[in-house]
Image 1 (cartoon, each protein chain N blue to C red):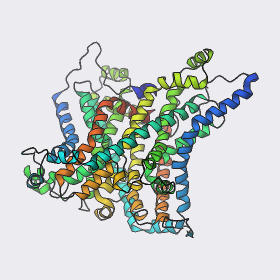
Image 2: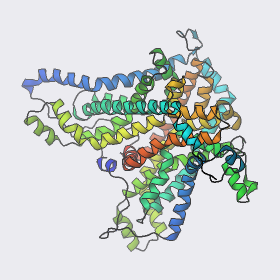
Image 3: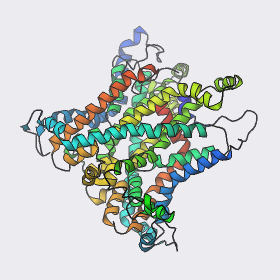
Image 4: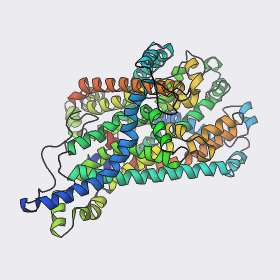
Length: 290
Length: 323
C-alpha cells in the first residue's frame, strides 16, 4: 500500500544510463494522435474564448482571426464570476481540511487502538463506499433542508466531508498501521502520551497519505455538481460548476463568452493538477490498488 | 464483505493488569473524542439519509411536513411498470457494457505503449489524464457546444470534405447514446490508463526477460505474462467502471437536460430519479427510485464481488491486509 500510494508509476529506466531512449516513430505517431484527441476539445474551449460570435458562426472550427480579449476581459470583470470562485474555494478548502482532520483522527483509532467494536466501526465506514452521492442525493437534500442549511456553504461542506470519509479512512488506515510499533514504544518510554504520539509522530509520518487524501477531496469538491445543484438555489451561493451552467443557459446565444467563462473556470483545476500531478495519479492508483 | 479486522500484528501493547481500569477509561475517552466527530458526520449525512430514503419511499409525499399518505409498495410498482424507467435502465445497461468494451482494450493498448521506456512518456501520460480532472460541467458544456449541428465538429468535417459524416450528434435518438459513450470514453479513459500502468509496474521484469530469452515475441509475452498478471487491476477497474456507469448522472444532465435526455435516448436511472423526484416535487417517489437504483447497484456489486473479485486477494470493499 504505502509504496504504491507514494510512488507514481514511472517507467523502468534502463540500467546504468540516466536518459531514456527514444521510442520508435510509430509509437510517437500513435501518441501524438491520442494526445491530440484528448486535448482538442480543451483547446477548442480555450481558443474559442478568443473569438467573436460572428467568427464562430462563420467558421465553427476555425482559429481566432483576429484574437479578441473582450470575452475574457468581460468575464474577469464580472463580480458573478469572482463570487463563484470564492464560493468554490471556500467549499473546497473547508471540505479538504475537514476530511483530513476527521479522517486522520478516526483512522488513527482504527489503525492503532485495540477495542471490541473496532472491526464493526471499520465495516460501517467502509460500507459508505456503497452509497455514492447520486444514490443518496434525494434524502440528503431533505436532511440539509431540515437543518436549515439550504443555500449555505455548510450545506455542501458537511455532506462532502461525510461522503469523502470512507475512501479517506480506507487510504489512511494502512498508512498509520505501517508505522512501526517500536516508534510508539520508544515515544511512550520517553514519556509521550498516546495523543502526544499522535501529534508528534503520526501526523508527520502520515503526511504523504494525508496529502493524497486532501488533494482528492479538494478536486472532488471543486468539480462537484449534483450536490450544489440540489442545495444551492440562489445565484449568490453558486459554486463554479453551477455558475458555468447558469452562464451557459443565460448567454446561450453568446457562444464565445460561454467558452471564455468555461475555460476560466477550469484554470484552477488545471493549475492544481499540474502542481500535484504526481500525487493525484499516485493517490488514485494507490487508493484503488491498495 | 469479509471481516476487515486483522487478526495478527496488533499494534499497541496491552496495558498491564494493575493499571487496567484507569487506562481503560482514558482509552475509551480518547477513542470517543477521536472517532466521534467523523462518526457523527458520517452517520448524519450518509447513513441516516439512506435509511430515510427507504422510509420515504413508501409514501406519496410532496416533501413538506411529515409524510402521511402511506401507499405501501405503490411507488415501486409504478417505477417498475414505467416504460420511461425501462428505457433509462436499458441505457444504463448499454453504458455499462460499452464502457467496458470501448475503454478496456483501448486503455490496455495505451498503457502497454506507454510502459515502454522512452523519452516524453511522462508528458504523454499527464496529457492523457487531463480530461479526467476536469469538472463534468466543463466537459459537458464544451462538448455540447462543439457537437451542435452547426458546431465545430461538423464544421471540421465539412472542411475536410467529409460533409457526409456531419451529424446531429446530440439530438438524433439513434446516435446520441453513442455520442455520450464517446464523451465518457474521452473523459474517463485516462483513469483506466493510469491504473493499468500502475499495475504493469508491479509485474517483475525478470519474468518478461526470461520469456524473451526463451524466444517469446513481444505480443506473446503480453498475452501469456502481462495480461494474466494484470488481472487483479483489470477486475478492480471494471468494477469501478460498472458502478460509475450505473450511477451516471452529471454528464447526461448537463448536456441533455432532464427532458431532452429521454427523447434523445440518453436518460439514465439517475436522471430519471431527479426528473421524477425532486424536479416533479414527488419526494416519496424520488426516494423510491433512489432505493431501486441502490438495490440494482448493490446486487451488481455483490455478484461481481462473489464471482469475479473473489479470486483476487482483496476485494474493493475489504481491507487490504497483505503487504
